[in-house]
Image: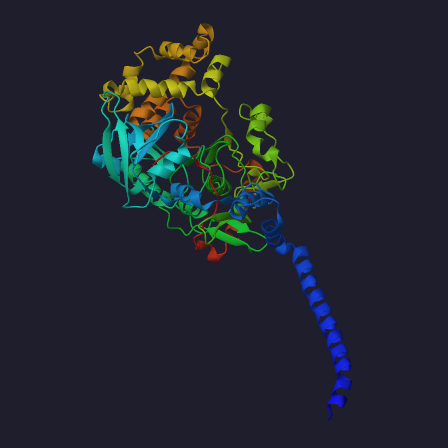
Length: 580
């Protein structure tokens, strides 16, 4: 073909190329534009798109990682009151209480006047081995001063806790010396007990205080029961007051110790979680032991599973005040960066079929958070008639006794909060923390003398003679609380109970402290009375005695044979840790 002939087609080829280029460009522009809009307008990808846009186009530099950390709790708070986010730095501390141990130096401490004061040294722990003592003040960590405003619980934990086998150097001042003492402590495993006390209330009845439901709670219970049985225990008071919960599996294992075979303990069910029953397997060692369970407004979650199973199976009496009302099950889900969420995946139901979750509104529900204060103001802590029961949610125990859903476990026997002798002077002193401060300073100043007394009775006999109420009044006056002799006299029993109790706790620990408090506790008195009269096993109402066996059989038949499985870790918790 001649050159002239070829040149004739060049304009045509060029025009066709331009048109094709325009069409291709338009296609790709529309294609990618549509995808981009689609990403932004698809709910599941909106958050990622938003973060990319902020990172690319926002006027100032933004730390996207911090933005995500701040947003996570807010997102979960829109679901329910108990779904939560735990940052990576907080996961170990959050899990330690329920794991049964953590890695640290083995002390319990308080922070007074911007300084760490060691309350006690855990026996057998790393600190005891190097010679740390109760009363010591930690004033430096790793050669740097650690006093002043920087000293907070969180900061103290981060500096004193650490991986097992790692070393930390601390500087200490003793109360009776000016010399700075240096210690190198190799961190080790520190046990965290979930049963605070187990002892005989009298010659017949034992007492067990369960602080939380963790991985070691069930074996701790078996040890406590064995100890009490060796001492001739004929009936048990199990104290769950103030127990905020923990692992559902631990509660199921514990209830199993007290129930005969094939009794429904609890069942769970959720939108993506089919109903799953958990029942007793008949291997419990205390199936016939009389039992009374104590609850109050601080008893939640796993505590309510335990109390609900005992109540609905008519296995024992529940005594105290209405429990918290948490019937939501959380599943821990871990992220690759070490953080985790506790996501609500189901509700749990007691054997009678009641969900005891109290009402809530999705999102940041202020009324839910204020519920206990509302109950207090309404008078529920002081009068059974003030308790608002949802009469539309009526259920029945195996013997036909009436129980209610919709907000906590209502005790079989109500015992009001003991406020005899409360005055404005006492309330102000307690709310401002002046009683705690005074007892700490008194213990600290007199530790050498107080060490001479080995049990709570000996120590109590000594401190009763020290005119501590008058000394407290002088201390409080210097702190801005004017002395009020008449009000002090009216409240003297409350003051003495708390002052003596705190000193006993500071010197001897939790079990002696609880022994002392229980000596004047109306709820303990009522529990002993019921056990003594043989009334710990509930009786059916007269009108339903004939149907009792049918109901018991019906509840037993709802049990799924798969129910003997151990539950996954169930419930969330909120615990303040002051152990390192």
